[in-house]
Image (cartoon, rainbow, N blue to C red; front, side, top):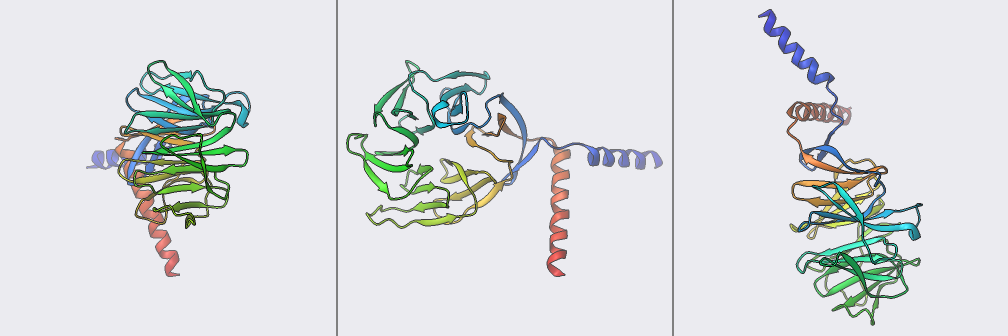
Amino acid sequence: MLILISMSRSRQNHTKNKTCDHLIKFGNEFYDKQMLFHGYGKSYSMVMHEKTGDLYFSHVSRSDDFDNREIMACHIKEETCRSVEGISGGFAVAYEKETDELFFGGNDGVYQYDFSEKVAKRIGVNGKMIYGVAIAGKYFFFIVYPKKALYIVKDRDFKHPLKFLDAEVENILLTKSLNVYLSNMTALYKIEPPHRPTKKLIVIDDQFHVRQLVKKINGSVYMCTFEGIYETNETSRKAVKVCDLDKPFGMAFYESMILYSDEHAIHSLVLSNDYECINKSLADMDILRSRFSVMLEL
C-alpha cells in the first residue's frame, strides 16, 4: 500500500511539474505547437494550396516596409521554401478553390500564378501597388496602396474597376455566399448581400486589430488579430475568441493542422495526444472557473 501511494504521488508530482508550454487550445481541441520554418516571422496573407502542399505568403525580404516584401512558397511536408518568380514585391495572396486559381497583389498590379510554369503573370491594374486581394466566383476585390482604397471587378474585367467603399480598408474577404468581411484601424465590418449602392456596414468587433481574414469551407470565418484568433460565421454578427496566440501575423489551415506565423517563424499546430498536459490544462481551467465564480459571488 505504501508503495502504491508513493507511485501515485510520484505520477502526480511528475504531471504537476511537467512543462506543457507546447500545448495550445484552439476552440475545443488541444494542439502541439511545432516550428515549421524558422526565419520566416512576420509572414502575412498566408494561403494553403492543398493540391501541391505549398503554403504561399508575403514575407519581409530586407526591411519591414511595403517595397521590400516578396511572395514565398514553402512545402509543408518537404520543409523547403522558394521565392515566387515573375512578381515584383508582393503583399497579398488569394485563392479560389473551386477553379484552383491563385492570385497575388504586387508592387505594380494583380498577378495570377501559373502552376505549370511556376511563375506569376500580371493580369491587370498595371502600375498600382496592391495591398490586398479577395475572390469568390465572378467577383474580385483588390485594395490599392497607399490610400487603401477598395475596388471590385466582375468577370476579371480589370479595365473597368468600381470603387466599392469610401473608406480605408486593410483586409478583405469574400465568401461563397457573397458576404463581405473587411477591416481597418477602427473595426471589423460585415456587409451582407445584396450589395446596394448605399452599403450597410455591420460592426462585428471594434476592440481588436485584424492582420488577416481566413475562411473555411464550413462557413466559418477566422480573424488573425494582434490579440489572438477569433471566429465568426456567415449567420452571425459577432466574433468569439477561439485561441490565445501571442501576436500572430497570419494563419492558414491544412488538413487537421493550423498554420500561423509570429514575429520569428512559421509554426504548425498539430492535434495533441499528450493527455498528461491536456488533463493538467483542463484541471487548471476548472480552477480558474471556480475562482471566477467565487469572485462573482463576493
